Image 1 (spheres, rainbow, N blue to C red):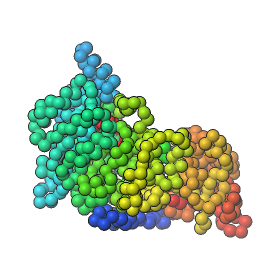
Image 2: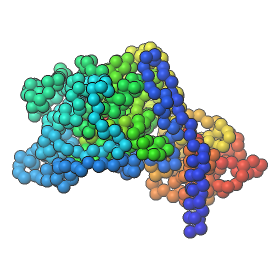
Image 3: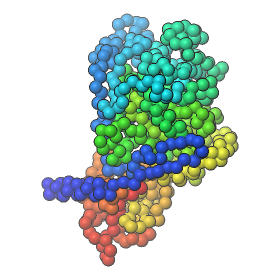
Image 4: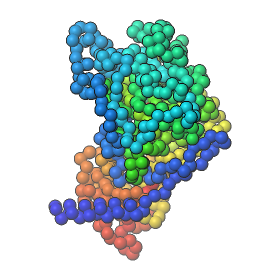
Length: 579
Ligand code: LR7
Ligand code: MN
């Protein structure tokens, strides 16, 4: 056992060295629409899911992701952000407390008692990395002015007020043009927002504007309604249950000032829905799966080498959606949002594809931190109970994804006749902005893993027919011409599994046999090591052997063999990882 352990470690070390040696292309994207610019020089390495890549699906960035990259949180937290103090705020002392807590969970899916007890404002830990600029900006820097657009539907009152209050407290007034509240036809009695004057007085801010929709529109149309009222240079969209951190706005504005076609996204810190504890998020970026769900992924390996790298910004294939800043005129130019998208879901993926495909960019700004309450469920539905995520995703798939929309349709098993409305206006927009196609986006912005045979255009593929839309478990792999088809699309998970089409795991199922099988999460025979950009083999952790092809030809079977065996006459061929 020890002997093979040692060998394994050695091999991993060798593979690492190779990775370092073969380091790096970088991506340069050019600008499509005249007048709108992104910084071409500021591209992060093109490499994607890599040796250490980790992935989380879902909204909350897993704190175990890359925790070393969260930076330091130097400022001593003053109550009530201190966990022990917060516990006291949740103590139920009487019937009224219990009522507030219970109804709060029901209506908002977070602990409204704690939120009430925190009150309008609190100190929170400064979660920025030490390299972030802490010097106060002056008017001489001439940053653009921001209009905050905050939409809400039945938001908890104290939480909403605190969201606004943190903006007022932590934003230099000369950078804040206005705050626009869009009340999406809330109907909870506790929210008496017709007392707008009262709200303004309590918050002591004159440029607070309040719009109430005459009917429920959903967050997507509500944001556009707010944005159209705005007059500031830059729009900043925020959810209604957030707390902005120290100097959160300045780095976003700085980026947009130098790149007016970049959508600038803060790091979204975690506010615990039960305790309201505020904790830093890891530095991750946005991806998606073929269900068109947003997910967090690690930054490409090598992005954070020296402390200065923690300043960012980092290119991100997608964004979570709720919190970002964008040049107001650019937002208009880019086509705002799809006004036929309802209530919730999909608009974040849509604007992500659109921004990248149409000459813009999305970048995460790690020195800008905004906390968001991450809830375990969404406490509201759409008025007619419809699955708006499905409709919205169908619209975006049909407008932006070309033939790749089929992956989504198959993945979600969408009925053929499902009505997603008229998309002709959005297609016209795509035409007018002369946007690139989805293949370009995949290739340049969000490449997945390809398992390619050294020196060829051949890739590892599963060729077995699908059973009821799924790959047959136990199917073997063979070489096929590299294409971006689902039977060749591999993704690596945080546990170093290699997953086909987001469904089945690559498994060393015999001494030589390699198949795809149900992911068992026990690692070992489903755990793989490899590097990116390096002509080094993919190594199985349980067997200690490598992916090899019998011959460099289409149809050749892929199996496990000694990692060192040489290529050529009669020898095996390495299957290496490439994008
Ligand atoms: O009908 C509605 N009308 C609204 O005005 C429904 C919601 N809203 C408001 C709501 O009160 C809130 O302020 O819209 C905002 C977002 O709704 P949430 O908080 O229920 O959404 P979420 O935080 O669960 O979901 C994320 O994905 C959404 C997809 O449509 C939006 O883009 C959200 O803004 C987005 N939130 C974030 O990105 C915060 C970080 C979470 C992550 C990842
Ligand atoms: Mn939210």
